[in-house]
Length: 558
Image 1: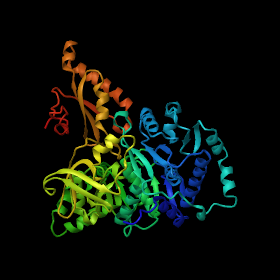
Image 2: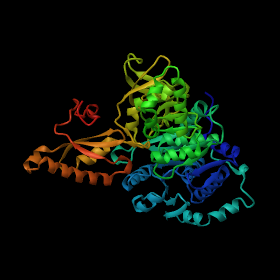
Image 3: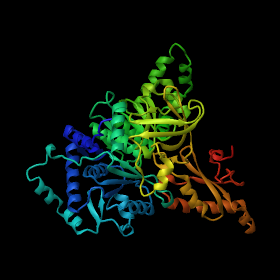
Image 4: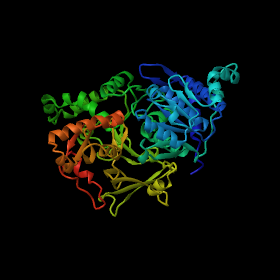
């Protein structure tokens, strides 16, 4: 293909084209128009420049989704610095690890992180900036402190009369310039910084704008940002694509419960809904299934002459629950519950699946709802190739591999891990198993990786939790499994030691209750364990002594 365009040029053009439109709103809070965003970005650029932040320097961001988080992120990229998004629910040690490993010069923090973090634990930082008002929390740089204190004055000197759209001019990136480092985890032993150059952002933007947005959604439409922007799925599909198209993004600035999300849908009437399956499933089970699963409704659905009209009515009812204005719901990160999926397909509701990874920023496959095949996660997106490593890809599952413009450069300061997943022909090995139909639909059959997906889209790595749990009293070995939307710890206790100490089952249960409290105190809210189940026998293992996790997914041996 021809030269890859500058990603930042699309941000710049969107701001100019949509100057007077609403851009970003904190739900139940203030709204920034595109020109407000431009003004805030410019002030941050002046701050960066006067504090001598260089192109390519790292800027970390740790806070809840908000308009100012989005502004800080865009300001970082359009300046030519490298953004390092950090999940706001990470514990301080996890944040320190990422900030230090990435060698970040600046750290933007939200209201929670501002009170919990100790700048002394991040010696390379030159300053900590408070996201809600961009004030300085801490500074090791006199130039940074001066620039922040005199920011309005410096802005006025640069733009003595006015600041208008013709002043908007951003760093025009090259395809392989590093745009962001997105860490797959926060714990030292598992932390991998995914290096995403600007081409990955442009290629995702180009592909998804063409396939999802253009022709389906009016410019200026409302979009609700539910997923964490520190993760690529939420960042790209709910934020970047929508902003560059000129849509109005609403951020749920607090923990998004299903009832709160449903309330926002009813008020905002979003044009498209991007989510993870559990959010959608909870809303449907709470608001729809009690109605459609009544005896009367079941009777009507079984009447051949009227069931079409009944399905249309139910479909309209579901649409209203999601705001009444959506083109489609796109879910990703995990498969839909089969019952819920069948229900959507049966009533003709516009639901579809996508598939991707952090390492592909994130998209690998997607299909419009009109082309959705139950059980699949769509077809290969533009700018990408997908293969199934199997002698019979249609029938025998094999590893899903992919290559193209969406694929990362590698893991930051970890060549060994990079070589393990990107082969010498440029194919990224996802670690997921799947098949592909003759017409190109991909079906996920299982995960080689053990990553779990939290209810709000957070990645959960069970090995991290298990390492902590295995070090606690009377724990011989453990597995973390997901049951519905809860995490459960299966523990094989140290029965030999328990016997020597004369401990009963009740004693072990009491110890595990204490372990549970201690463990959860160490973990972010989204990956805390609901309860621990004692498992009398050792877990069955492979020849390499890895636990056969698939045997225990329901909490009992299959």
